[in-house]
Amino acid sequence: MITLELLPASEYRGVTNDDPIRFYYWPVLGKLYRRRVELALNECRGGQRILEVGFGTGLTFINLSKMYQEIHGLDLSVDVKAVGEVFEKRQIKTYLKNGDVTDMHFEDSTFDTVLLISILEHLKPEQLEKAFKEIFRVLKPNGQIIYGVPVERPLMVLAFRMLGVNIREYHYSSHIDVHKAAQQVFQEIRTIPYSTLLGQVYEIGHFVKGMGEK
Image 1 (cartoon, helix red, strand yellow):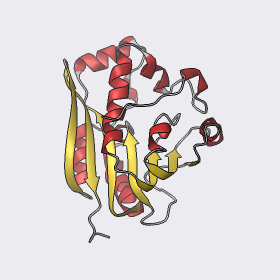
Image 2 (tube, helix red, strand yellow):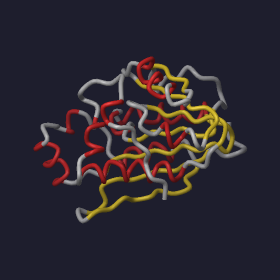
Image 3 (cartoon, one colour):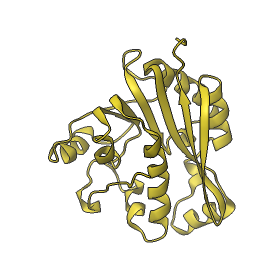
Image 4 (tube, one colour):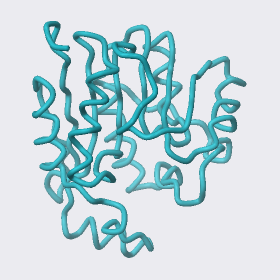
């Protein structure tokens, strides 16, 4: 299993205080946050180019730099220059830009992998199929999409409320909505549950663009 390689929290740049990067360093919650990323990274098979949608601080970039020749990123709101500079100092070249997963300005058949960690639940259900079609378009034949989405539990919602976060204000689609939308576009390989004492709290989806599909 891959171990997520993090920088010291103070070194990340380019995001607002709403970014969850602080949670990754907390004793209990941090393990949950790191584990879901590690499960997604473990599905990445490497290649020439990866696109991470919603890359935030770039917390996956150290791991991805060991698997892919080029790291591309798309994010709605981060300061792409600030994030890029953090990793350029560590000899990790990135190609980052602001943009929307439902309308991506990339050429067809560009990426070996598209990675989305805790992104798709922020889309409304009617946006999901459009997003998956765009992902399908930019993937190479036999390219893979790997996504992670939370499986909400009442105690999870309560825990976030105690932290001052109402996830109902941010999550519009369930893991079931995401799975159904993905199946409309991709051939399913598998889904991987992440369970704790509370039951399943996260799900990794791994789909592939078939060689004969266009």
